[in-house]
Structure formats: structure tokens, C-alpha cells
Image 1 (cartoon, rainbow, N blue to C red):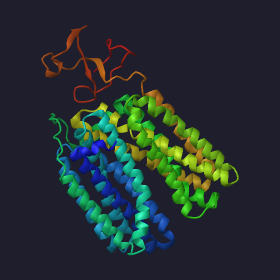
Image 2: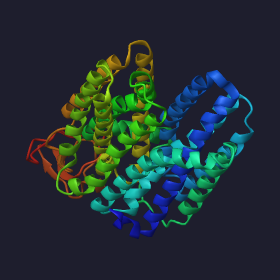
Image 3: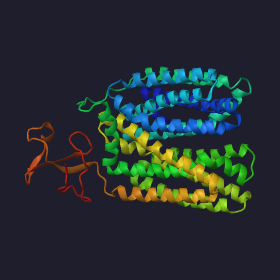
Image 4: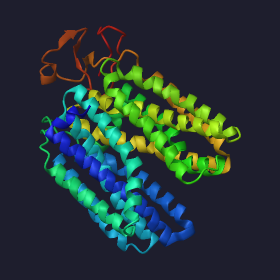
Length: 458
């Protein structure tokens, strides 16, 4: 898997991602301590509001950023967002009011909402080979998981020697290093494309392409299944560990570590698995595993706590991480198959926005139910939501899903360049090629299983 690091451009982008993630992890710890200093007993409410601001920024700003990405060079846009994040982190030690935390978090996360989809869209251009791209997707998943495990440890070590305000300095250094690495990466130019859409239309187009493409509609349902299962891990773990199992604070890290370990195992194995099995065959079983695992978690949370049930909970958390990673890692491959090169930033931005909208639904659901209805019922409700999402994905994603589709054009003149290889049949122009939604193909044609015979088209 590490062979992709021989590519200099990818190596620099990956290192930029890693140092930025470390900086973000340090900022998360320091922000918690800052909120406690400013709000004391209301620190949880402050952090909850900051998390909501983060999600709203991701949902609203990412599509706009994706629309701008084909008008601004990717390196310049990513570097500018890194510098913006560095500036936001730099002022956090001087914050003295809660509202200032909210404003700074908004600026920080808005820049992240622009940086991440642009970064994701650059990778398939840097690594055009599908096997290399799959390895890169796994590397990115590993980077996220390792950051969630190691950043708190690094923060603890640093806090033993310096005040938490210094962690924001580490965050600033991380983003500055990320900007330097991005600028040092030579990115291939995207394929030239006719610019027929304005910024607003391009922002909307990414989401429209998502909903018009069957496999991407299924991907959105799969993202909802991941968010349903992941919410109980990220929102309820501390309550599960401390209140249900009566374990010490250190056990919270152990439970989250089990989730991360499961996710990393999947990321390590998937490049080899996906070399011989198609995405649908891998992703759908993982989605159906999530409600089963959550139901098992509900049974554990209904029983009296004990050593065996604690060990079983760690297994459940690890399985949630494994299934979630099995769904998330191949997602970039589906987007790459489903969009023209010039539209990749808009579509990655749409995925970023829509997937975080799923988390925006499941986070408060897990938190509210956990506080009012109990942990076991929370797990059951989230399992039901994950099951609905998995069934929806299976229905939305056709078993026969080729890249090349025969289709008809009713609205293009015969002399149009796009019809140069088309044939006239029954009064319409027909041809076949790798089909994506774009200016010439506005709806998805109906394909007939294992044939390219006449399909309805646009």
C-alpha cells in the first residue's frame, strides 16, 4: 500500500493531510480546555454548539467551495484555506468570550469545508491508476484513524510541559506546514471543459449529479448507515463506559481505540479485496452488518454489566469501525466513476456536504435519545435507521451497473460534435460510452441487465 508514496505529488499531499490532521487534533483538545475555562459547567453546551457550527459549515459551504474549485487552481485554493485555518488557530489563545469561540470555529471549519473536497478531487488526478487510487483512499482512512488515536496522546504529552494555549501554536504550525507541502506538489492540470454554469449553478450541479446517478444515491444511503452506527460511538461512548460499565476515564480511550483499530484493519485489507471484487459486493454486506452489530450492542446495554459484556462491547465497537471503513474507503471510487474530470471538485464537495448532513441528523438523535430514553433504546433506533439506509442502498444501486451505457439523444442536432460516433435508429441518435451526468446527459438511462441494447436516454 505504501508504494503510492513513491509519487512525489501524492506524497506531499498525503503529508499535508497528516500534519493538518495532527494540528486539528491538538486544536480539539485545546478547544475543550478553553471552553471549560470560559464556561465551566456549561462547557459541554459550548462544545455541542461548536460541533453544530462545524457541521452546518460543512453542509452549507462545501458545495460553494466545490463550485469555485474549477475557477481557482487547486494548489492555490488549498494553500489559502490552510493559511486561513492557521490564522484562525493563531487567534484562539486570545479568545475571551464564548461568542468568539463560535466565530473562530466557523472560520476554521469553513476553510476546512473548502480544503477537504478540493484535496479529495486532486487525488484521482494525481493517481489515475485505479489500484493506486484505492491504496490512496485507504491511506487517507488510516490517517484519519491514526489521528483520532494519537493526537490525544500527543496532546497529553505536550500538556505535561506547556499550557494548553501552546497547543494552538502547534495547530498553526501544522496548517502552515500543510500549506507549504501543498504548494510544493506539482498537480496535473484538469482536462479542459466548457464552462457553461455559473458558481451557483455549479454548486447545485454537484448535488443534482449525486441524486441523478443511481450508484451515488446508494452511496448517500450508505453514508447514512455509517452515520447512524458511528453516532453511538462518538456521542455515547463516554456515557456507555462511565455510567453503564462504571469504568475509569482511561477506558473511554480504549473503547474509541477499539473502533479505530477496526477501521484501520479494514483500510489495510481493502486495497487487496477491491482488486478482485466490485465495490457493490463489498459495500452492501458491510451496510447490512451495521444494524446487526448495533442490535448486538443494544442487547449488551440491556444486560447487567460485567467483564464479558465489556469485552463484547469492545468487539462491537471494533466491528462498527470495520464496517464503516469498508463503506467509506471505496466511496471515492464511485465518485470517480460517476463524474467527468472537470466536475470532480463539485461532486466531492456534494458528497462532503451530504454525508455531513447525515451526521447532523444522527448526532443529536444519538445524544437526545441517549439522555431521555436510555442507551439500549438508542442503539435499537439507530440500528433501525441503519437497516432502512442499507435496504435503500440495495434498492437504489442496480446489481448490473456498467460504466458504458447505450443511450439515445433527442435534443442534440445531428452535427453536434458529441454525436460523431452515433447511429440513427428509429429517428433518434444512439451511441454508447462511459456514461456520466453532464451538460449532454441530464438523466440516467435505463439499462437492461447484461446487454447494451436500446436504453431510454436523454
